[in-house]
Image (cartoon, rainbow, N blue to C red):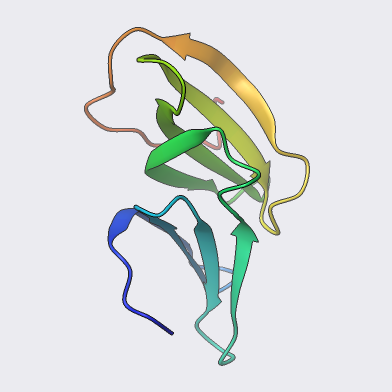
Length: 107
């Protein structure tokens, strides 16, 4: 695999998965058990530059926070662990967050 600049990272410890967002606009899933790496969200599917990733391990959801590509606002999205069912959770934040973590118990 080529070296890529990392813009965000998160892990699902129960499923032994690591998620990496790259500065090139992709989200990659890597298995810690198998030698398997998959691009689950390509830059053509994302309208944001991802800065934060967080796994909701209770509901098996991946949260993405990033700056919209065509504006100066930020947004929060979520998807399944395979990249399917990508939806917008919060469409517009006026400033970038300092940090982001999903809270599986209280949402």
